[in-house]
Length: 351
Length: 130
Image (cartoon, rainbow over all chains, first blue to last red; front, top):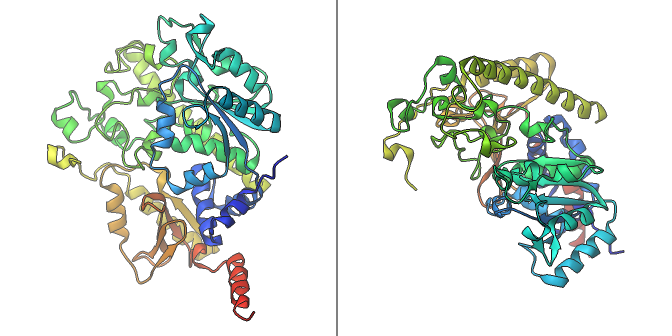
């Protein structure tokens, strides 16, 4: 069996000083929504961690999730995480193809049986195995064969997590999510269309750091990133409270940056970290750019009525539900915050 | 790139997200003085509207001491005009901000020389005598 260096050895070989490593750990703690008091434990854990083998499977998808990850100007922290994993199979990124690529997948599975991670983007067509194949293997067969020896599975993007756009009505391929098929392994959902690159790497970091997967919500999403709604963390929320709304995309309210609720913003019912982590190196997110949240990290977001219909008048019912949704948003936010504190105290106690 | 102000969109730092942080800083100063417990506020986890982060930075101002760390990109560590309140910004090698914190402490840990680096330095020095 080949020698697997620890992350500490990899960083040392790259000439990273202890100060640099502590800076990396501080950013990691922030990434995982852990308190700064956890930095020494993170440092010890990462230093001694060995590179996990990762097999990335792409099924019915648009490659947007891979684009999000690889076109994200890769901040150093993410670059380091990817130095710290062994990406043994990714048919979009790898140089090998055909039989050689499949041989690499089988070799990684054999060598790391029981300990490798499987990342999946795209949904799986169950209508006909021929709808989507790789090297003549149906998506279903490849998924089930690969997850058999996996430690855990991470569904990257809304298609793998919930079926996504391929599963939108009338779902011509019979698309299903990974969780619909994989029942005997832990499955983490990292939805979004695409998901935020930092969230994807955070899940890997958690596994690398603590050898365990993050705490999940009822949809299998990491609570650290999907624990509060976009609305809860939106900088425009004070305008919602004041009743100041943009009525059209070019009125005075829109120009003044008022709340986009009446323009169809799904922020109150959407759980994701866009409002704080943001996009494009933390520059902005859809609402900051003047567009309502589409709710892309929620199940069946494509079939939930018009993107530009307010929640109060659209698919979700009448005005009474509007108030209900707002109250539920606040209440769920409180539960998530409490859950987050519980999680933090768990780690703090163990430290 | 066209700035939002150039296409007639007017933003002001009026969303009310700065004041609560200043309040938190004041409480953190009390905790440092009364109980000797430092506090770190992770600014990347808080909501900011356009201009609000700049407003926070301007409000805290620049104090007597600043330092630059060159490790995995540049980090700027600067005491604000409020002694004990440090503005820390970590950049990656491309100059992008990867972490932004307010530390309320007497001296941020990252400024201290680390034992591992001291030992490695000593070993390098020892090589000079061979």
